[in-house]
Each structure stands twice: as C-alpha cells, then as structure tokens.
Length: 131
Image (cartoon, rainbow, N blue to C red; front, side):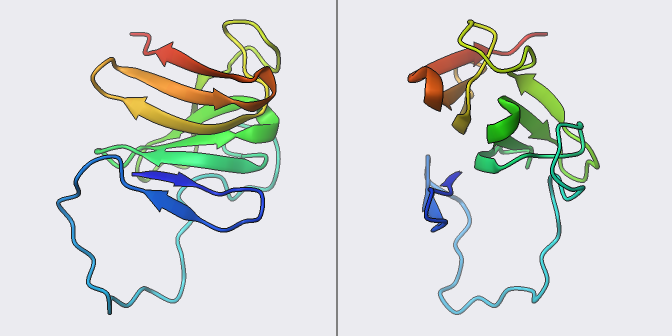
C-alpha cells in the first residue's frame, strides 16, 4: 500500500497490489491512535522526524518514511522506538548518495530496492539494498 499526504493534507491511499484484507464499510476504529514512527519532537535524531511526507508499509509491517526536511528515508520496524536511515545518509545534496527533500518512497521487492521521489533534485532514484 502506498500512502501520500500532499501539500493540502488530504490523505490518498493507492493499493499497489491486490489486498487479501477486506475492510467492511461500517468498520469502527479505535478512538486513539498509536504512534508508530517519530513522536519525539521535530529533529534529526534516529527517533525523530522532520516533516514526514510519504510512506510505504511493507508486508512485514515495516514503515518506510520520506523524512522531508532531514533529506532521508527512515525504516521503522514494527514496535521499534527508533528508526534506521536506509537512504540519504550523506545529508542534503544532488549526489548519487544524497537526497534533496524526498517526498515519497516505495519498496520494489522484485529488485530488492527502494524507489524514492527526490523532489528538489527533480528525479526518481532507485536505492538497492546493501547487505
């Protein structure tokens, strides 16, 4: 599933594959949400986010967040209290190992890589997973 939160803060959800989960139209949701990434104030710490923009939820419930003002993609495993930078570890820039205001991210399981919409570099970048 790909979730994008555009500038005007409406949420759009786009399924990337057929889902095996059906949500009943009259489903009820809990009154209080649970923080699954960030929540420790704005900043660049590994347990913080600065303007989280787009995200992707993998099959194992890992959440990949486009951390816009930190120029990085952060992976948050289910139940984790901090994330792990998986792309953009070298700060803001236009190098092959840098991002400049990333907006969205998806995981390409077939090629074992991330695909990132890198807004101010005006490019879409594939980041292969390092072992």
